[in-house]
Image 1: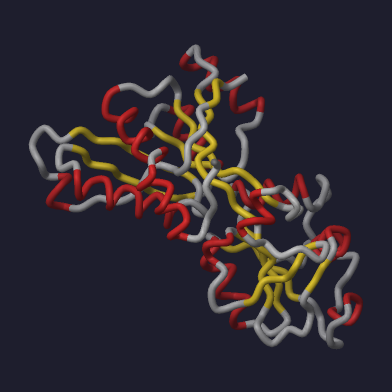
Image 2: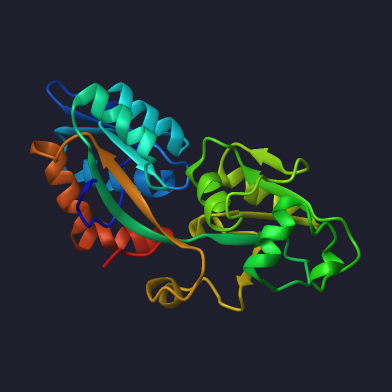
Length: 272
């Protein structure tokens, strides 16, 4: 099992040419979850502006991509919007002899995106499962207009895709009609343009669309904090070993008041 460190953030993605070119600058690489990229970039930008001897380079690509990079030794920190699988932990141990370190760094209410013109305002967990597995195909089956439901999803290397499949679809396969898109921003954009569209993703991306209640509950800060919103989740950072030196200082900063304020600023929720 992982040693757990409660954190409030992730590690960041931002490289400024003036900083990366500094002689002797210590570099921290971060890779993984697209859900976390905006937050990670903001952390990195803010931290580097006050610590000129550190270069923090962040890239996305999905949680699965980040975990693979952690196992391969090509990133210092992996951002993930889902827990690592036992098979992934096994690979990490086989290569580095460590079970790694899991750092819950923020909370997210996984948001169901609807077009602003959609009259539907609430969906149950069962209805969401039936929609995304293809059992429900028309909006009139859930109180909306007579129109075919257009499904949008993340790609299968996304932690959000895996979380939604495990926790909403209960392991069932997505409908073959579901369109998988590269990144949460692409899902939001598709739903914003498609009056019959539905998507899902991080709360911080829910702009230009509306969200659906789930089981009658809004994805508000209080509902996510108290656990009443049914598809709340942690966002994680994974490391191969317990952090030391510059990385520990960075994580400690994320845990502090400034890092936690940035989590709220972006639209996610502190873990404390």
